[in-house]
Amino acid sequence: MSLNRETLLRSAQSLCNDFATKQPLDKVLDNFSSTNQDDIYCFEHGLKHSSVPFLGRIFRGRDGAKQYFELIATLLSYQDMRFTDYFVDVENKAVSVQGEATFTWLSTGHSWDEIFTYRLRFDNIGKVTRYEVWADSLAAYLAGTGQLEKRAC
Image (cartoon, rainbow, N blue to C red; front, side, top):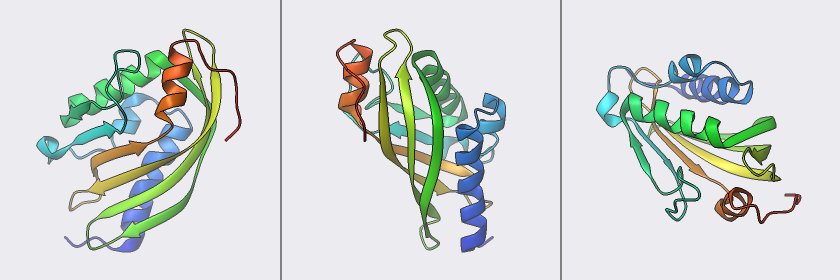
């Protein structure tokens, strides 16, 4: 099946909207491929460090995606998340999108406003196989270690 721009855009918007509106994890995971589970890859770019255990670590398969989102939920909360500037690459079955939100590291209570980018790749039926995040890893590290004062984007 060949994916068109509209299908890829709807698929990306579905994942982003489910995450932004804090839908149950199973609903978020429904956006990921169930037929190409070996291809699923979640990765948040940044230096691997024990203080920020979701950075620089590859989470593989649907179980890995579940582990990634569960880990995020134990460490961070967020509010006012929104996504804009969707860029659809039909040839590579990929969508890049800009997001922004206010994040809070739960154990320290430190918060920061952030602009971040997702790059999503899809299987032949429009389900996510690659989920990559580029975000402010220094802010996450400082918040997690209790060294961050709230700052604006």
